[in-house]
Image 1 (spheres, rainbow, N blue to C red):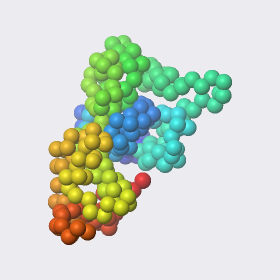
Image 2 (tube, rainbow, N blue to C red; image 1 turned 180 degrees about the vertical axis):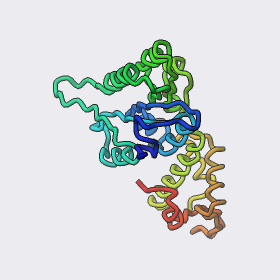
Image 3 (tube, rainbow, N blue to C red; image 1 turned 30 degrees about the vertical axis):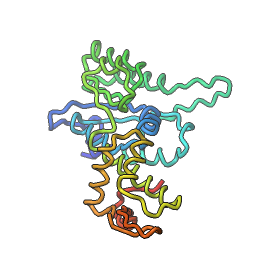
Image 4 (cartoon, rainbow, N blue to C red; image 1 turned 135 degrees about the vertical axis):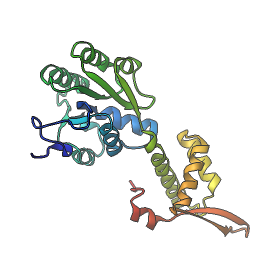
Length: 265
């Protein structure tokens, strides 16, 4: 039998062998991308999300929705999504006189259609933090007798939506948090050194990132130590112009690039 998206059997041929429910996912990519950028200074980690999702269900379909005209790098984002699915619905409204955002309406319409017509689906996954989806979640659970799981960006999920679901998971996932802080560390070091500070210190770097991005200093410190232990940052003693000894940290950009640890944006 042929394989469909995600390496699963094509629709109609699907056979569950692991006991997990068959599921379909609806992703509000605007919520994910914009909230991650504003609150966590990072881009969506689609691979990490999908890895987590596979532990909970057998995904037979996943659809991404967004008004991609809002994205600075539309082509880059759609290309990232297509690594996982070709089912991308651009909700852009070309009406110059009515600038209403139709993303939520279009997602809700798709959810209700699938809930009514796809009786073999056992679980509906809604990736959004918007309370508008709480009614759809309640309908699916109470009238369709199906499970509902919600993913949403941390500190950006409606309580009504969360309470209407069987379970809720916040992103970034715990496994992603250190990766996001790594990115902040590398970005900060590059900016600092480009501005003329060729001798960034351990504590100044930690304090700067903690203050600028509201990340607990202890977390930043822990991540800098991890990067030193892994060889991505080298700690050494140097001499200042005033002939004082100073302990500095230097990124090993070649190793960072070689291992793909950080992609300079």
